[in-house]
Length: 305
Image 1: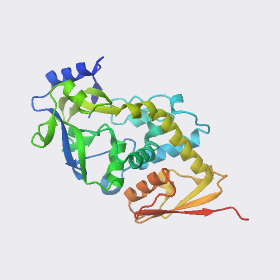
Image 2: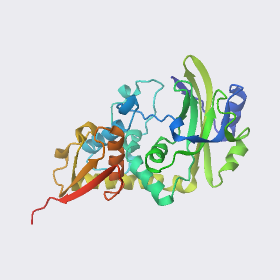
Image 3: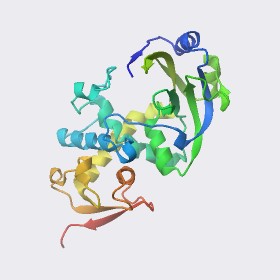
Image 4: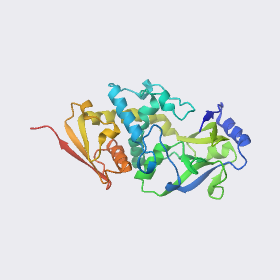
């Protein structure tokens, strides 16, 4: 699944390039889909239940970062990760002190906070049809989709979809033939594209992935991520974590946090389910008092009076 970005100076130029180079049947449109119709895979992950990647890998990455970096101040102090067009890119970039890996898991509780406090997301999630999986695949918006699927209670939602093969032409709410149509569809948002050439199963496709970002999110994102990471580090330094599943599988080592004053016991309703365990850890780093029938947090003060 090699890919190569196609650089353009302006968003309209990117759209027009895609429009005239794309396969005849390819379309970009707004569509309502069941969440179970959509594939969402995370990079750097171990496989979870049913051979579907969960977020265990990015949780491990975060703990490795905390162990290696003792004095976090700002995500802007770290290098931006620019992935190579290879499937074994993690072997080429073993260093954990890169932006993409640092924020991958903190972004989950951050996005959960955003979803709950704003009663949903202001930015639409993007999809493209993958000939490999035979279904729409999330990009951009994997973190938001994860929260949507596991915490919203929804079974369907609206998305932007790049349909490469015309599979969904009869299901679109609206299709877009000009950049201005798309730009006007979500006012008060910045519209960008990721234009690329990608090969699926020996066939090259010109792809245009849609990125909408609200002005408010763009202005505050990095500061809020910094705050989220600092809250997570504070929790780890204050509370020892225990669980009815193996926290070592997620990279947690209690000896790395010798000065905790209390214990949080995580009770998963199904300790054999990686999905339940992972959403419990996500919720914990959002709010240790989070209530959910799938898991619970019990806090015990370790100080003896």
